[in-house]
Length: 554
Image (cartoon, rainbow, N blue to C red; front, side):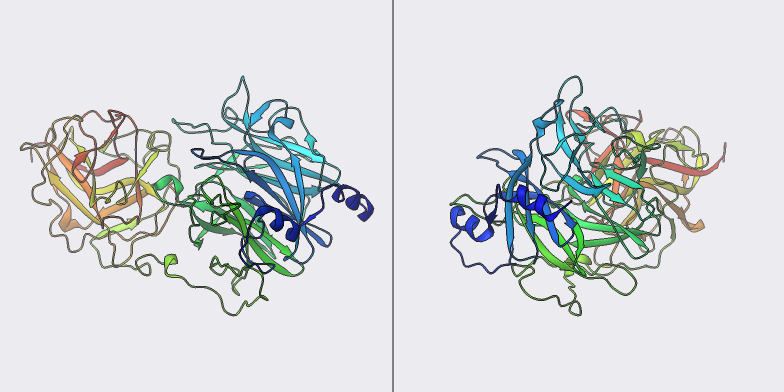
């Protein structure tokens, strides 16, 4: 692609940032490179692309009016050669440029390959399919015009393997990456993170869709590579009653194994969403995101009126990324990699600690487990991955909760040795916000069936609470196995009613115990603060399996 060609396309819509500010009505003083970097319109979901000496950023145009959450009608592009002064090139594509789509210009990414520019993006699919889908468009230049490259969606709701409760926005937010061997990969998804290899034609999958399991994954993945390490950066926590933050993982190969590295940056202002874009440009790494601080012509930022911002990004010697603070200064000042950034949010409540305990914790024994390990004496759900899809922690409700419990009644007498929870995600257990295990018998006036509205606990059958703390670091949804010390292995009787509780600090989220939306276990249910949890008048059950030695007549 020649510079002459680029200039021909760019000359149609060349508007300098200063001119854009003049028409936007933004009156505050602004230094080039300060955040937000685009101020003529509301923008979201930034996707940077380097072509020669120019950096392009593709964004959705946020146009939500009063009472609207999102209204993103087109994708626009900006470019720069110095990271401070930007040129606005206007619209490069609309969702309805795909004949099969009906709207919603959600997150996208453009990459260059074989002298063409491939645009992978999210739209709303029209009949006969429903929900969000991923399309592929192609152009001869980074400024378009982009056209549908395959005449049908690359991914739609029926394409991906989802658990029992699929939702209409499973297939969103594609990120695309071409490795050194020329292989191109695409990752996407909401709550479930999918990865697939593309054929050289860039419009078909070359092999099966696989799922990657990472702690706290929500949506908006971004793939990049630096030296011999691969990085997967993503918004986290939004499906767990929290604002999205940015988390990341690292791997020696794009197919994994991926190692969770924690929170990279905190939530944004005025919006529960955030979306990463990471790129190296002129020997410096940059981190793009959006917040909702900007006001244009008296219209304030909001959930659907966001604005793109930019920060320098730095690595540690071991390849991990230094935490990123969101600033007004942005890249208006020179890079200062030696300073780093260490806000307290990255260790909420303090550092992860290992406490003395009579519970032996085994983590990551089976991510996305479709069955329990070994032969449990009792289980509340047969296939936890497919059915236990609702994450619960101590941050549920306005004031949070101090306990989550699952009631049960054994069919045989047995001595309880081991407990398995279907759990994951969260911040991890810290000294000031511990998680403690408890087991109560509740036959007297307690739970008799899954319809009982509440229960009153008696004595903790596991013994004194000292020694019952659970050591936990964030893991992907899967099995969390808790083996009890021999002195804490109670005898449980067939036909009696019990409840297993995990207890924590109100408002905290060290881990999430996952439950079903509907009843899966006939003689018990899920409880919060010892009151029955209901979803639209339906009761569910926490993922729980119990192991031990059965006996008769003892």
